[in-house]
Image 1 (cartoon, rainbow, N blue to C red):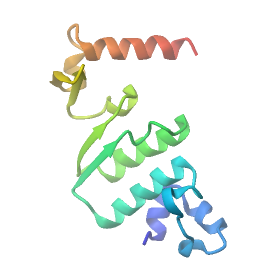
Image 2 (cartoon, rainbow, N blue to C red):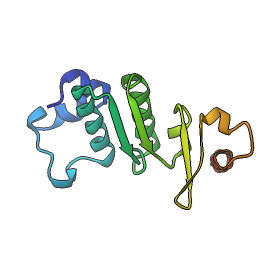
Image 3 (tube, one colour):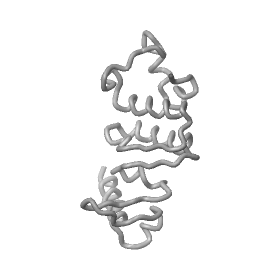
Image 4 (tube, rainbow, N blue to C red):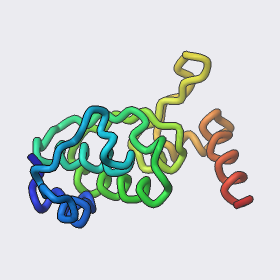
Amino acid sequence: MIDRISLERCQLKDVVAAKPDKLDSLVVDSGDNWSVGQRQLLCLGRVMLKRSKILFMDEATASVDSQTDAVIQKIIREDFATCTIISIAHRIPTVMDCDRVLVIDAGRAKEFDKPSRLLEWPSLFGALVQEYANRSSGL
């Protein structure tokens, strides 16, 4: 069950309020009656209620729009600050404020350090950040 505070923190309060059965609304198989972003936010709300000490995310923001990505990142920073978070991610902004980043290339661990340290010298991570910056500036 998800409570009111979790709904507010995950920005789902209005969505749930608009559903005929409110908190008793069903989530069908694969969650197809919710958007991808709403499903991710709902999962974060459930984790908030469980007060988990470890949060494992596999491409949590890969299929969401940039606005929902920003909401998810904010929730992670604010509501899971005391948790250990293991996140598999390809989006550079997702990993920039992590304590450590593991860069894997062709199935092998190549680099492991703080993002800021990996940017201090020529690195695979630095090349990825530069590529992201170049693509972002072209938008």
